[in-house]
Image (cartoon, rainbow, N blue to C red):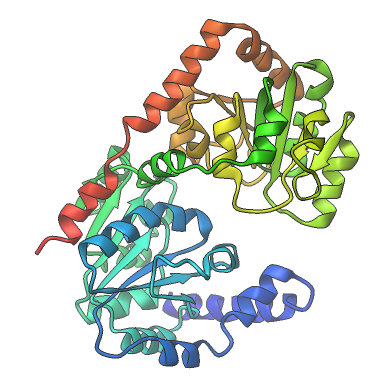
Length: 409
């Protein structure tokens, strides 16, 4: 199995190099790792106490961020090193000031893992949610370095729990503790012999409550909203926009803010070409002009979490593709959350549906019927909005529970 694993890593690298000639993310993935050893050597101070956090991409970073901030406060003399696997995390957060060092993670080969851990020499390692790299974990275990998995969630269909998953279960033996999101995850791990498990919940709740409290004022959005009810469509893809945009004619009292997941010129222009009413771009309007628009397309990044506070209803994109994006940022603002049909891998979406704060739709007609309820049935709306807020507030505290273990003297 090790041979096949190593082969797959090398084949993956070759494919990245080949695709990088015409794919932006592949190019970032490849170029970001060129010269990585020289950068690590020149930046990381020898002999300092280093705590290493690793995230796959941006979503996992947001889960890990409350723990990073808490560790920084709890251990002010330690240096925080952050690594990403994906460009979607590194390229957005490469200048994050809350840590001391930020790098792409070198690919998981035996030599890379040995070299990286020798150079960095971490006192503690924290992986976020789904990251399982055989050689890195094996090297950490050999060196007896405390290693934790935070905000983890396990499902019965994962390879660890299959009859043929024995080799993959070796990955799990490297973790000192698992901090899992739910009881089901703990039970699954216990069935295969792991008792070093604590149910702490999801650290994203701690993060989104903080983000909602610290949300900044955005004058253009304030002017756009005025006295209207607004649907904030966040992290959308074209299939989401095909369902959302026709609503504007059906509900003349409604305005829509569209925040696409990929802010490319072609995507923004595609959205604008589909709008049947006046639409403006965030970067090409002002506080007076925007008042006359019915649709505001946010063609810049970093504003979505603050925009949700201006919404009456939120629509979260991705549900007609590989899976929905972050529903909790919107729910933390106390507004109902709508998303497409592909949400089954997201426990928070299931929980939002269960408490009638979240709704999944499959078609435009279903979305139209739902909006008729949310916009015109005041009791239905108020119950959904209050349940959204309550759901988030009742699940905060994961970071505090994690710190009780990893920051213990």
